[in-house]
Amino acid sequence: MIDSAGTGNWHIGNPPDTRAQAAASRRGYQIDQLRARQIAVEDFSHFDHIIAMDLSNQSDLRALAADSIEPDAAKKIQLMLSFSSTTDLKEVPDPYYGGENGFDHVLDLLESACSGLLSAIRGKPSVNT
Image (cartoon, rainbow, N blue to C red; front, side):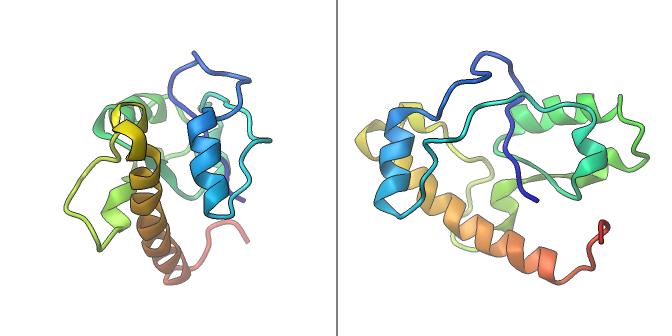
């Protein structure tokens, strides 16, 4: 199971940005039905991997992991671009400030990183069977 959540609460219930929807649609991804939610401490028990897009979110996730009953919760947190072999960037840039092509650039980064993440997952047995 895959899910997406933010560390902040300011977009809860909202659909993705229309520019994100357009960029995703051009690549065949339909994300218009998604709605934002905030990560919950219980997510550390439900998911094997907790992926952060940037260092600020990673820090927020580590603070939340401290409240988890999951003993190794913080070990589940990784930066998304650590799975990419096509960039030296550590953080996914905020597409809101990336100009006209910001969302496409972020999708390029995420597609590469997702391929690496899937390879990493396939190389390990799943905790939840």
